[in-house]
Image (cartoon, rainbow, N blue to C red; front, side):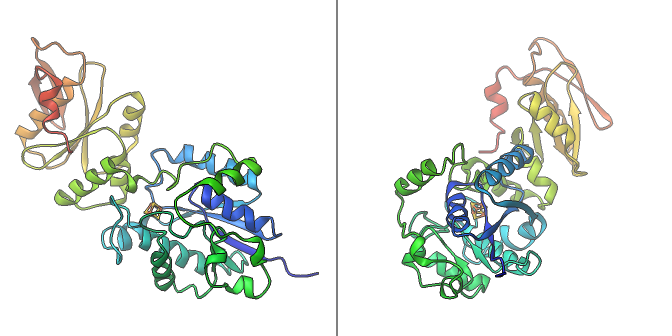
Length: 330
Ligand code: SF4
């Protein structure tokens, strides 16, 4: 019996990576979809995982989640060799890292090559033609990366040369039009897929501003990823960070955060859970209490006791939320 050919796919959750996998599965290759968890892949990882499981099952790939959070934050996020895209997204380095990790995992999964859903000339940063080359250089995967959606526009790879894949059945998509992808998705019944980029928070302008602000004042730890995802973020006059939740879901998220950088506090009225950076001065604590109470139904004519760490502050809300918003991180 001939040996089963297996590929590891870089799987973002988006349509292109799904189609790339499906094209290869259609050729009788076993595909393991590797989802790289950088920590930034979306707000709720539980929801994301459920989606990833369902959609990979649908196309017949096996899902593996690879936790790269620590390495990504330590080696890539703040010092990418090829810089950032439009926001805080170091796509070229991030992509090269995925290929490097996937390459190292080939023996573990008894896999022969790597597939990626990149399309030549489609996206401004990670998928420019020269970017594909840079990714290849950075990752040193030597002809083992197949990009099924644009394969016919690129030099033949080892899997094509060895006949594991029929080049003729791969595609020659290029540019930003999504026409061919939409048609194929319809043909294969792939629905409800994520938008391109797979919801990566690093491509989001607001989230990027919050990271940029954070690193001006503080060290960046893994726990900070979760902190940055939820609530309104304020920068107080002496530089301390205050986070005030916006709703019940965020209350739960901020309650669940395990970080010893912050003091957690609530207000005497039903309302937000807040986190204040340890080390805040008494004046900042008072202001934090005033901001937090502004996001409750507190009366402007009354004073309320808000306990932060060991201190109790008597505060009344700002006249308007506008005043509190002056401290928002933009
Ligand atoms: S969008 Fe860019 S930074 Fe985010 S996961 Fe994809 S390649 Fe990495």
